[in-house]
Length: 468
Image (cartoon, rainbow, N blue to C red; front, side):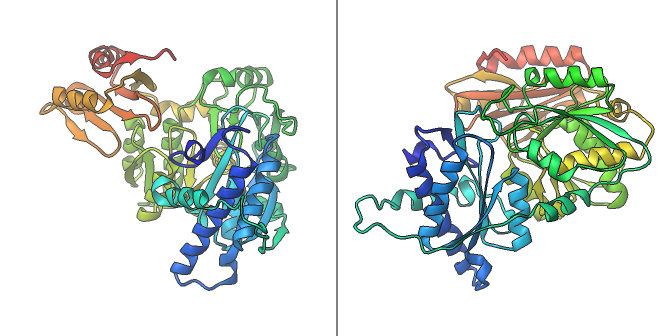
């Protein structure tokens, strides 16, 4: 049962089968053992290294799962700081604010309401994924089978409820610079934790007017799936932006660590184009700094970083790798196509709230529209992600590489990247799904003609195209 809930980057499954309170207790026990053993191995004797932050989202199953998780943590002997119903970046903040052993957020992020799960972080909110501790937690959880133990183990760890909203608000608003221009924004909270976060953090600010959409988050129902990457989920937001004549709009996912933006024309902004815009902004105040970007991003990202005098750093896809790249290179900022934006001064972690603050700040410094600021970065033609069913993924990638060998620059940083841009005006990346027999193609070209021609050439080598 445990094997079905552990994924590459977190724990996630449907509730109550296979994820339930019994499983949550075991994962809590295993998480506490892993975090405390790691602290001990590092020779850290600070009493806070026995404390673990726990937060949860608004899903109906979250209170029960959080309670079971907490009991498992306490049974191992760790102490719990319960921060209640918060967004995921709040947990990252609390871990660093307290300088404790780590934390767990009870959430299924963008998944439908019948799902739930756990995002586990170590000290300084270091991400714990399959290769960075999640496998060990899974092993420890499987060993924590005390159902037949008589008497049953008694929790010895303490539990304390804490409210850090004032500190969190101060931290997020340290990234915000509003000017005399009043900015009107439509915010779709997706009936998720952004509804709480926006009211706690961005209320009563001069020169900011927020139009609320889907802010109610205690019913367990979503007006639309809390996944802003799906264009259909942005329909109400886009319509409202036009109706309100807003400066821009954004939609958060369920736990508010991701955000997708639309401009004043209600056009969806690519996260790579937004990364390019924000990179230029950060490099004005951080000359020569590193900027990390998802390797699937448009070439305009690297071009803008170079133009602004920064150091472009390509990263593998996924928050574990993005955060690691920021940390290793001392980069000031990073952006990913999935809507995750990372900030050095936010403990190298991602935050939808801080991304919002940065876009607000950029717009406040100019009289230009958001669409005008983004336009320079949309000069190339992109395919978007195209999925192909293929039971022989590795063989297909090998054949694709052989097909273009000698005619292109080849990279294996994440999947297969083929770069023919200088010679033929196109490049692409093909990655394998971690969980399905699927290959994912992203292709970019100088124009639509080259783009469509290369998609038609490459597609037959990748398998059966999946309807979007």
